[in-house]
Length: 343
Image (cartoon, rainbow, N blue to C red):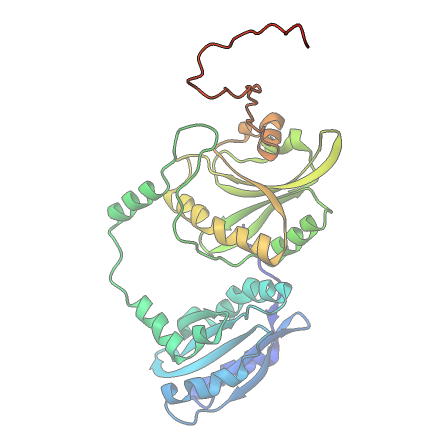
């Protein structure tokens, strides 16, 4: 299932973009305001696209405020001029703003049409989106052809191979891929972090390359195993409420469920690769204190004993009996002396 933020393009922006095919606009800045995407400012060309690039784009970028930049190239096709779509999300902007713009990115592409965009760039720093960053992105796009289907499948299988040496099964992961998180998923994750719900399940939309909300609930540990699907991978966040040594505790547990090879190779690859960036968002941006990260094959593994033992592992401390130090060697047997008459 696919979730969007619900933010739409306002009529003025839609009409303005329709007039841009004559080439009189070089760049436009789009912001989200009052739950709509609106035109903030625009500028006309001064020279060729490469000479204009940094001069037109960089002054529009604010250090703490995300935005979208549409920049017109000089290439024209049967559909009109080609544009570069820049999604600007600086590191120091508010978390909610970052996630709102990330979740709305697909909407703006759908509204204006993918065929208009030559390149899409996502940037958190100036060097990501300036002319040098754009050219670097184009070089990556024109990299050597990918592996054949059989070669790619073999590579993915090797990278997602599962060890079989006990319950601490780990998956070898690819370098991280950061997919945007949908707005409703963001809201429920915020609710979860504030303790209003105890369970959140998330899925990856393979087609739209987005992390979506699947389910929320208020459950206890006994119901957790029933939430794990047997045919698709999932990410789960669970607030484990329990007692330890007589003390009531709440601990956040992240669960990555991967039901073996009953799901597609692409699903296995994407869930494995997106896990680390997703956890980074949870811990670094939403400030969740995740006590334990588990990887399981099926829901039946999530017994109360197993979760408790993972959150509170037993300490293997072997106590040695006190051994009296030995005396220095070479003294021979100990002699017993009788007390003298004078003592």
